Every structure is written in structure tokens, then in C-alpha cells.
Image 1 (tube, rainbow, N blue to C red):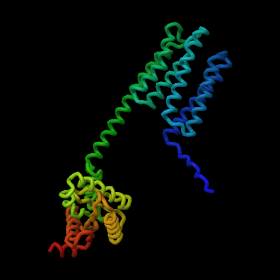
Image 2 (image 1 turned 30 degrees about the vertical axis):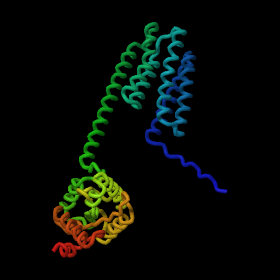
Image 3 (image 1 turned 180 degrees about the vertical axis):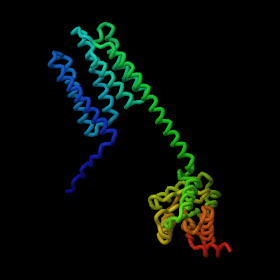
Image 4 (image 1 turned 120 degrees about the vertical axis):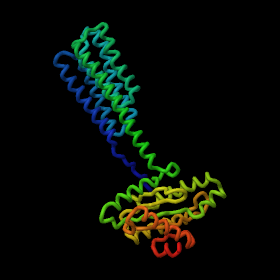
Length: 346
């Protein structure tokens, strides 16, 4: 009788580990406060802090067990906020001043809320924590009035830093996205020709030129027939699926771009001449055996090694000549030799 596979526990993410650690740190802090409160007769506040410490410790354990952050974050903030709210009637009934520790709890909520949540959501948490502490000041004196001013200034500073940081991150993400769009073909998602040209120029500028780099131009055979028969929308779908297939078939680390129209360019790194030939033949075979958009497709290819040329223009021209040699020889094949290319063109 077969046994069921055991579930695999995934490692905690960086954010999950940090949330668990900060929750444990708050549990320790409230525990220390509780045991400091009991000897000086602050029994009720000590019990509240101790209860908060126990619950925070439980949350830290659950966080280590993989509790979702969307649940953990509100629970941690809700627990500290609840402590502030419960402290108000306790202080009122016992006729005590509002201690600085309550304002510290409000500060904890502000720091965590602006760290974990978007600015608007964080404001709601901050208001939920500070309103009872500030409202209680209407009938209870503050034990340390300067700490109230410092606490409010700290909250404003945290809010400003959070807003600024979120804006900075958003700006950086937008800039990175626009930079990526500038070097991507919008249809296939592959690089456009600008990227390989820049890389190849950089490699040719360094002497001695690297021996193990191959450049391959690939062209979809009879692509115009697909557009004429099925329409340009089908042609675009074909280009997209061929791009996906090429991305899957070329070795990892290959730079693949859409060169233009139905042509693609691949830059193979760390390959000898024979290895580059074998890779391209395998790719052509896989395309030949795959039906795309219910059409049997083939590719023609022309390749050149980086050491065969002194400029990028010459290198691309060699690959292009050999591509046309492959097409002239019947398509669905690759050409690499200079003599083969010149013979067909001549």
C-alpha cells in the first residue's frame, strides 16, 4: 500500500523571519516591563504588560510556523493598540497619571504601521493608538508632559520618513521599469537589438577578443505566407510563441533578442564552434517538431564566431550572409562557413 508523500516545509522568507524576530523582541520588552512594574506596586499595569508579552510570544511562535503576514501584522498592531485602550479605563479608575510607557506603545504602533503598511493604512493604525492616549489627557494628567511632545514629534517624523521612503522606492521601481521597456521588444518581451549590439561592441573593444562567443541570426521560413493566409494577428501570435520556444531551447545565459520582423538574434557565451553548431541544430530540430498555431514551422539560421570579425557590423553581416545561404540551400538549416555563404550569394 503506497504512502502519501510528506509535505515539505518551505523556508521562511526574509520578511517572515524579521516579523517573527520583531514580535519576539516586543514580547521580551513587555515581559521586562511587567516584572519591573510588580516590585513598585504597579500590579494592574504589570499584569496587562505580562499578558501582552505572552500573546506577543505566541504570535512570534506562529510567525516562525509560517503564519501569513497579512494576518500577523494586524494581530501584532491590534494587540498593542488594545493594550493602550485597556490602559485608559484602568488609569482612570485608579486615578493615576498617564505614564510615558503608554506613549511608548503608541510609538511602537507608529513605527510598525509605517513599516508594514501603505501610508494611508498606517495612519489609521496610528490614530487608533494615539486617540485614546491623547483623549485621556482631557481628564488625566500626563506623568511626563515633555514625553508627549517628543512622542508626537517622533510620530510625525516617522510618518514623513515612511512617506518619503515609499515615494523613493516607487520612483526607483518606475525608473527601472521604464529602462526595461526601453530595451524590450513590446510584442515578444525579448531584448531589442540595442542590447546585443552594445554587448558585442564592448567585447570586440577588448583585446584579445573572446574565443568562445557565437552570434546566430534565425529567421522563420515562409513567415509572409502565414500573414497572408491567416492575418497579421496570427502572425503576431506565431512570433510570440516562437520567441517563447527559443527562450526555452537555448541554453541558460544565452542573450536572445528580436532582431526585426521575423528574425531573431542569439548570442551564445562559453561555446566552441562545434558546440554552437550543435546547439543551433538542436533548436532547429525542436522547432521543426513543434506545431505552432496549428502550422508546421521551420527556421533558417546563420552563425558566426566573435573572432571572425573586427567590428559588430562585420560580425552581423557574416551571420546575415550565412542566413541567406541557408535559405538559398532550401531553408530549415543552419550555415556557418564563410565559403558556403559566399558561394550561394555569388
